[in-house]
Amino acid sequence: MEKYIVRGGVPLIGDVEVSGMKNAALPILYATILVGGKCTLEHIPNISDVLVTLEILKGMGAEIRMINKTTYEIDTTNVRGGTSDYQLVRTIRGSYYLLGCEMGRFGRAHVGYPGGCDFGSRPIDFHIKGFEALGGNVRTEGGYITITTPNGIHGANIYFDGSSVGATINVMMAAVLAKGTTTIDNAAKEPHVVDVANFLNTCGAKITGAGTDVIKIRGVERLHGCNYAIIPDMIEAGTYMIAAVATNGKIRVNNVIPKHLESVAAKLEEVGAIVEMLDDSVIVTSTGKIRKTTVKTLPYPGFPTDLHPQFAALLSVANGVSYITETIWEKRFRYVNELNCMGANIKVDGNTAVIEGVPELSSACVKAVDLRAGCAVLIAGLMAKGKTEIYDIKYIERGYDDIVTKLSGLGANIMKVYVPEGISAQRAN
Image (tube, rainbow, N blue to C red):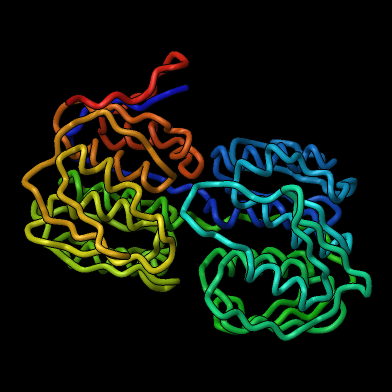
């Protein structure tokens, strides 16, 4: 086990490079199954969820060659459906993309129920609805989800009652090799949905409308391999932007698509920061004051739920009372206890965090309870004077590539150290 030791109170200053997007890389890695040949993928983030995904694919028969730290050649010619490792599948949420990919390529799927961070009820009802519309018979038993297609896979008109990124991508992948045309109405519009569609189109698929409410997939007989680069991670970029303001710093975030960051940039300007959008970078400057604000998480292009906890850390020292209303994940507020242990004054009222700003946070011994909550306490540790210890950092490293090195490059005093087994976070009374 490992932990972070952070000595805060130091402004973040300098340049930082953003890695490939986790939420695009995972489905695209699984989508190589549909190709049944070689793909070269660039800008793959070096994070634990990706490493687990590569192990799952290897175990299914894929041949994987690492060209450099961020580029992989993946040959799925000999992948066998229904052979994914149950224990590995249970460790990450993104493994549910195996369902759409196996169904699309083999006409059947057999995958362990997905795992990942606990955000309360995270059903895959929309995924199942889509698979059934395409001709799938879906059963869930013994910890596995099994899909059969006795009459083959055919196009369908599918309407989602709510916006679901995972279901949109999964159904899109299941439909690319189907007979006929599939229409997904009320589709998710997130950038990673567009990136998966672009990857599949580069491989020969016929997908139109990605990034809008309606996506059409015209089935093709086969796909072919390609070279493809994953888009930059807007959540990683947003995290560094928030951290710069929280520490009274000034940073330039490179390798970004500025349009993807408009909602977080608007909120940072609202609380008093200066944000300058360039062609492929963003400069964020703190003005030394943080004003109160109101935030509501929404599907893209709204404020992303994956930046909610980080923004809460920033608002914990704002001048006045701020409100963050969460509309996506019911358990997104698990970070609250950890921040309050550091002196924050946050109360949860239904689906809203009421954040009464305090003059400063104090260092403490805290833990990462999930991926984004872990970044919230990390930002808080960068803000607080003294030594903060962060345990269970495995959650943070599920989604952030080399975060210690990147923060150190901005001047942060942070290090990762080994913790003997059996030691856990102990809070001072």
